[in-house]
Image (cartoon, rainbow, N blue to C red; front, side, top):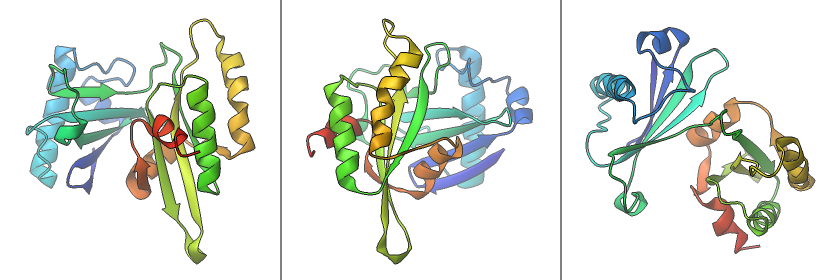
Length: 207
């Protein structure tokens, strides 16, 4: 198990396939409503507290799970500020993860300028996009800045996935789709946040 305290309110836990077997977890079946999953998660968090001082027992947290090609998974635990907490959330934790059963996939697009980013957000919002979305920027050498948009691609039940993805090809007229699974981890660890959770809806108003 690898622990990385990204900041005071965010911790990354990287589980190897051996760790997954030890805690009897799978990314596909990781569900906080399951008692065994709760026990495993809190066992991991107790270990993380001893090793890093990250205390997830105070207040609400959000847990994001991303599968690794190696067979393990990366878990991001974020302490929620009071303004970010769900208004009617009975549990102390929420888990967000890609779902193969629903056909959802996480996609990251890179843009060279903020105008391209906001225009794509406007188009997505106009099409009725309502999934979670995050926007980031990264400052490079010689003053260059790159912009990123992380979205969940979830085709409606009435629309075949292949057609849905084809209709979303317009995004590549403005930016580049990053195929690497590591791009999601990189953004959350290294890039600066422009907007979390509702980037599409928020940035659409700026286009």
